[in-house]
Image 1 (spheres, one colour):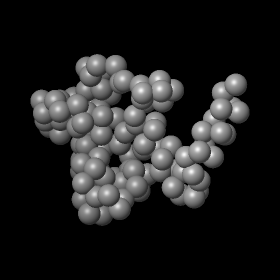
Image 2 (cartoon, helix red, strand yellow):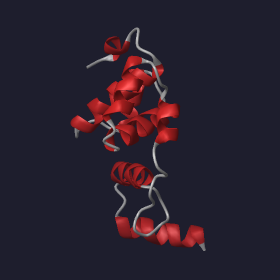
Image 3 (tube, helix red, strand yellow):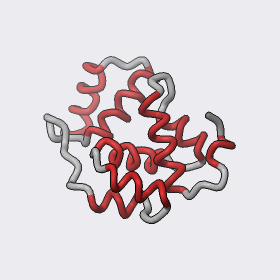
Length: 118
């Protein structure tokens, strides 16, 4: 898949398509999928949320261009926080990506966040 795959698509359809690719390709990072599609990483995060909701009707509406990513997300229930309640699951995923890229351990991140949040 390359940037020509996304030519002629609406922004929302690009995001859903790139999110599907990202979710099915463990070796690709969300930021790379967003760049390839020419959309923001936030659009990919929202598209992933729509796909993971299991609401096929919303996915179809976004794919057809009848609904934007934003409109579809507004119809989803409030995103649940992680078990600790600090971050959403999407935020936790992004944090894990940054940690891996920086070679940072989870305990080092926890220590850092405790210092920042107190």
